[in-house]
Length: 99
Length: 305
Image 1 (tube, rainbow over the protein chains, first blue to last red):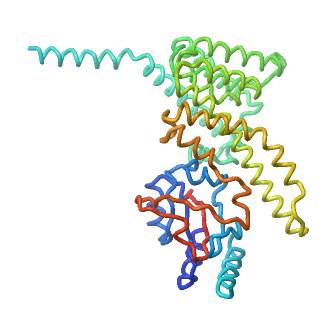
Image 2: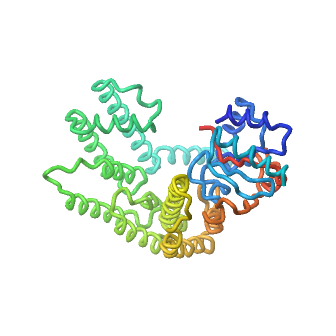
Image 3: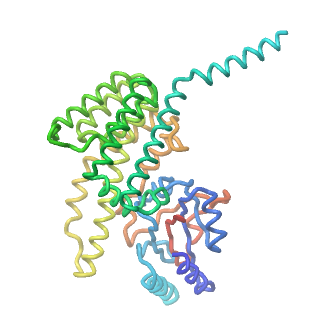
């Protein structure tokens, strides 16, 4: 997952695009992952447990779980990966500029 | 003089506690015997089957499967297990009433001999029920009985429920009662969420095949209405009466509130506005999901595992 996330973030660095995470690791593991993987995007920290408040509230049962939001904050896609993820993000960016 | 005396007294008390704490003694005896068993079993199975280095990834499904296969119909292993069962039984006798004694009892019950011609399914169920009864008799007033909140691995669900009702009504300890309420609620919520999760996956696949809206939607929500009401009532009970009782680094109040106000699958469906989140990053800086409005956002629940 990390390499694809990194390439998505660098490819869209100049676009109105954000990658936002919710991380369920213990704080030290989370910090180590940020360091090791060169993670630049923001993440909520969910208390160090998969039963954390945000995951509980959003009913997350599997990791990773992905929601794709358009620029108005509407949920437009879920759990797509790799090329399909690129495709829907590009499409939403087009739509934003076109509209 | 007085100070010397109190130092001596303190030292005496410390040494008495160290030597004669039956809880500590039983806990240590159980831990030692359990790790001795694990080591003996791993050594035996490795020798017989040249399984890969066992403790490295004990959760691996392949490894669990190969172990189970190695254990089934394996006479040497059965002998090993029986000899340890006898030693765990001694530990139960010596430490009945303590946490370690109960751990030993549960160790025996969960690793009960495979059903053979001498004990059919019915007899096994009856034996387990009698054993759970004996635990209730000895531990009803103890906090250790909380280990029984998770009973489903031992008993059929309705029997486990009956015992949990006894726990939630009779235990003198708030955290035992709270656990007996919360455990089945959490399991039921997980079940409903998994159903919704797989239902959604299934509908996505269906949608790929035929462009059609889901006809089963109404049936499903009606089906869920009943368990949901019971769950919500129990969550409210946890908030009202056990709000301050600690659990998993939080409190039952906070955890139950998060479940009670959780977003429904319908609220998180494609086309719905994403609910805002007010939270913080790992350094405590406030972060809101709405901070990213105006941008196309990939919102990812992740962990480094």
